Picture: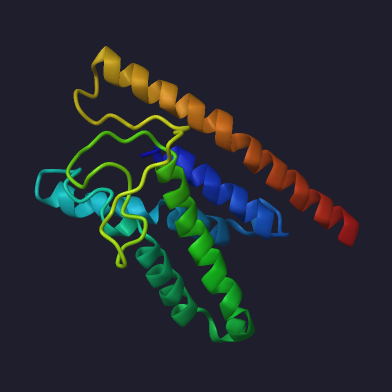
Length: 183
C-alpha cells in the first residue's frame, strides 16, 4: 500500500482536475477529496482496536463493490440543491475511492492476511489482484525505527511524490488555464 501522502496527492490532483475555484475558496471540497481518496485505508481502524492493525487491511474496502457503495452513499447524501448534479457526485466519489484502488493495485504487496494484492472484484470474486508491474513500495509497519524499515518507507515516499506530484501540478496548471480562458 502507498502512504496517505500518495493517496492524498491523487485526491489533490482530482480536486484541481475537476474544480475551478482557488484553493483558499474551496478547502471544504479539498478535504472531502482527500478523505475519499484515503477512505479504503480506514480498514486499519478495526485492526487497531483489536491490537493487530493489518488484520483487515486490503479487505473488501479495497474493491469495486466498496467503490460503488461509497459512490451510492454520496449520491444519496448529496445536497438537494445539487440534485441535477447527483450523477456527477456519484462519479467523482467513485473516481476518488477508485484512485486508491488503482494506486494500491500498483503497489508491491507480499502475501499477508488477505492474500497478495487487493480483492478488486469483490463481491463478484474473492480473488486478489496485483499489477504484474508495480510502481510503488509497500509501507513497512514492523520495526518502525530500524534502518531497513526507515529506508524502505522513505524511498517509497520519494517515489510516490515523484510519480504523483507531476499529476497535481499538471491538473493545477490546467485549472488555471480554464480560469484564465473563462475570464
